[in-house]
Amino acid sequence: MESSHEAMATMAEKAPITSQRKLPLELDSKLPKPYLPRALRAPDTENVNGTWGHKHNNMSVLQQHAAFFDINNDGIIYPWETYTGFRALGFNMIFSLIISFLIHLALSYSTLPTWLPSPLLPIYIQNIHRAKHGSDSGTYDTEGRYISANLEIMFSKYAHETSDKLTLRELWNMTEGNRVAYDFFGWVASKLEWGILYILAKDEQGYLSKEAVRRCFDGSLFEYCAKVRKGATEKMA
Image (cartoon, rainbow, N blue to C red):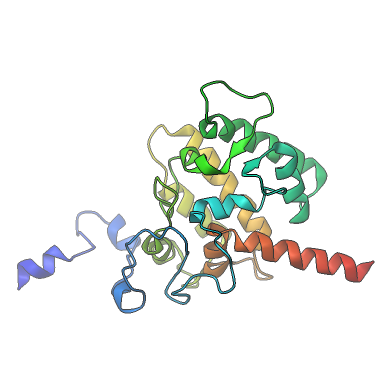
């Protein structure tokens, strides 16, 4: 019986970090097969079927995340489309211009269908899984599928003040905890991505909710934020 208990242990006495970053227990009772990578939906323990009303269009969850920026729906994202997407989310012109250039400079080549680089820096959604970088949360697998358990593990490890929300400090600790040795690009990319998400989706108290994070993974958060901002702009007009 003792060996069975040890086989399931998630903490080791001589590794204090395992006690500090606790894992969620009994996920199976709340979400069927939480460790199974999902290709089309991004569920969690509160949304077992993913985002209600969100259309996956037979794309992987990672592809859905990127598809918001494919303005003309041709499967290719150009820098000016990413710029348009960030502007629709409420970011200013200068930030949108800089971040669009950086994203395409970093990700374009790995998604191209040929070995030759393109001066237009397109990102091909079909190959977006090739642009997955290290030092991330592991919520996407290497094929762009979504792993529910890793979202739950993220909040169990780092959301100490409120179980389903992250403070800015906790978010920083999370990106630090996910760092892989000598992965300089991954360190910067992770900080940048989570920083942008925090700016976009934090609530009035300065928390980033698990629901916002989950919906960022399937891209439905971008659609929601753009609609809210468009509605507010129309009311002001």
